[in-house]
Length: 390
Image (cartoon, rainbow, N blue to C red):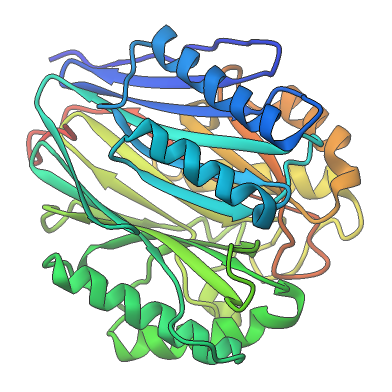
């Protein structure tokens, strides 16, 4: 079998980017698309849905291939009802996520989407309004959206509830937090005030569930963002994968560049790679301009921070035989919206051609950090130890 990796780029007026990774067994497609500029919320979001449909048609995708779609919104309270109605009208079985993170470009909405196209059936099953199970080949991916229960005002209590709810939801599918949870995206309201207590509560919960620095913890992005319910101080999207066997997951580090997160009592891994028979997935946690001792690099200088962030991501990938050119999607979070022109110019100069990216307002867990990035990379491989991805 000869694996093929290709990145296709299609630029429209609104600037979508599409990257595709293919082997003879199937393809994965990542889409980043911002809404066309219109006079009203409704007109702009309707136009975004229309353009997304056109992109799917152009790239041979459909409702059957759609797995995940996330909307980053400038005004989630106002825009969410319209998004939900348009999603309902589409009647597509996929995992949808809405987060209050204004596009830094000034548009009202930006979406990212993920599709799987396979020679074998990909079976999607909605387990609840906030969970989808996707069977692809020998594996089952479980995408879950978790909220805190009840109305407590403590970030510590809501964090504990959030992870209890995720653990319970996964167990109903036969999945275990410490064995199958691969990645989380945690969106925290007023992160400047809440992050430390959130991190402490997560660490305590993980420890009780057997997730420690010795056993490893999931890849994660913890970033500023709001949900639809004002009483929720945080919410979480997550990805768990069932069907993996021993030796298929490897946690990644680059100690010469950035320290493990547990150095400062935060429980997530810098990155993780998962081997499949025909490809390797590299999940990159939220990464900023940090050094090997845990210090912020380039304080007050966006360009220096962006460059150090790229160096850190490159260090993680290159230590495990990958490169920035293997990135399939990158999400950039800015503390200050006014930094968008500078970061957009930086990305165009330094990001390999054809890699989709989006830039949104998302405050970062340390006030000194101006920018954070996360993403996924994929590289072809022939590994007879494991089944193909799909």
